[in-house]
Image (cartoon, rainbow, N blue to C red; front, side, top):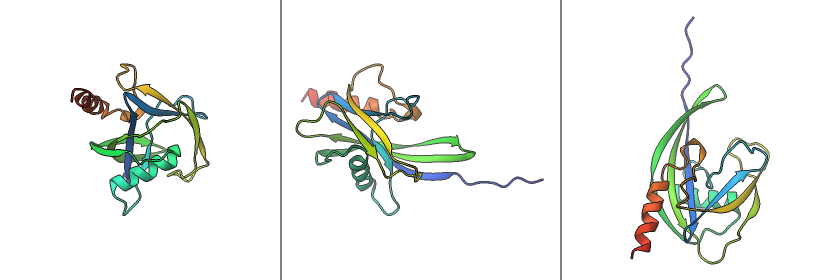
Length: 157
């Protein structure tokens, strides 16, 4: 009996490290407490630039304005298996410096899920970017060292 080869499910993803000073915006999914902290982000639509996708995803996931300065930090691929399929995410990491005062904590409903599922309630807060215990699941922290390096360079200017 021969097996059928299944192509991996490929998606372009944006990951946004939004900061104000040395604070990084993170959230948890309230209905899935086993999922650790994560930064905002999501799927970049076909035909969309990576920056346009990042800006749209930030607004959809946080409800905040993304009119600060945007910088690309780089990209990497992340491969995993789930639901009997192989997945490859081409992740594009961005640093967004938010302007003006920001809420200390807030909740927001994500209503535009990639998988078409029901809305998810996100609880947002800020973590210090240099917190040695700050890690994200599924390697979403891949560019945290670069973010920290850039913030330190800005501090020294």
